[in-house]
View 1 (cartoon, rainbow, N blue to C red):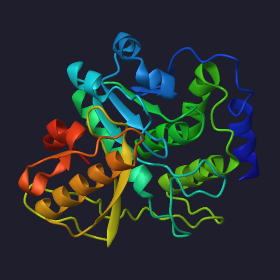
View 2: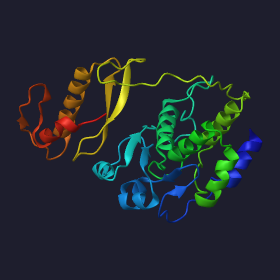
View 3: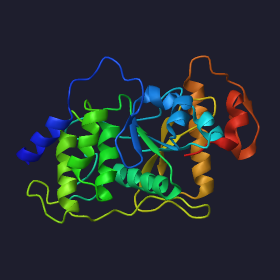
Length: 276
C-alpha cells in the first residue's frame, strides 16, 4: 500500500493552481471539472461533452438543466455526502461491496461509452469526489491506476489530495486484478441497483434519497420510501416542492387547484415536470 500511495502522490495531489479555466481531459472519454465548468454549456459543447455527472453532495444552484436538454447533454447525479478521508465513496464495507456512488457512476459511464459520447464528472472543486469516481470507472473497465494518473499528472495534477480516496482507488484496482488486499479484503460483489419502473415500486431498501429538479428552482434532496408506487412517489415529491417553496423567502402563499397535484402558485405550471 505504501508503495502505491507514493506512486499516486507523485503523480497527483499537487498544489492547487490559482485558476482552473476548463475541465480536464483524463482519458477514455472523460473530463473532470468543477461547478463553474458545469454551468458553462457553451464550453461543454465546444469540448464535445454529451453527458454530465454531478458528484456534489446536493444540487448546485444555477445548474443549467434546461440548457443541457436543449443541447442534448444528458445529466445524472450521485450525491457524495462528504469529502472526508473516511467517507466510503467507492466501497461500503470491509468486504468491499461497491458503493451506490460507484454503481451510479459506472452505469452513467457505460451509457456514455455505448453512445460514443464524452462525459464530464464534476463536483464543487473538481478535485476529490468527481475525480475519484472518474478514475474508478476507468479501473472497472480495465485501465490501470497508474495509466490513468499519468494522464491526470499532465492535465489535472492537483486532483485527489484526499488520502482516503487514494487508498480506496488502490484497493479497487487490487480487487479488479483478482488479488485480495489485506487492508480491505475487497470482493467484487455488486449490490442490486435501485430502480423505478413506470409501473412498479422501488425495492431493496426502506428509504432512498433522490435529487428533485424543478424548472425555475434549485435542485434539492428528498427522502422517499423505497417501496413506493408511482402515485405515492408523485404525491411525496409534490408535497416536498410545496414545503420547499413555502419555506423560501418571498414565496407566494397562494395555490392552484389540481386535485392530487396541488402545488404552490408560482410553481404550479412546473408540477408535471418534476423529476427524481
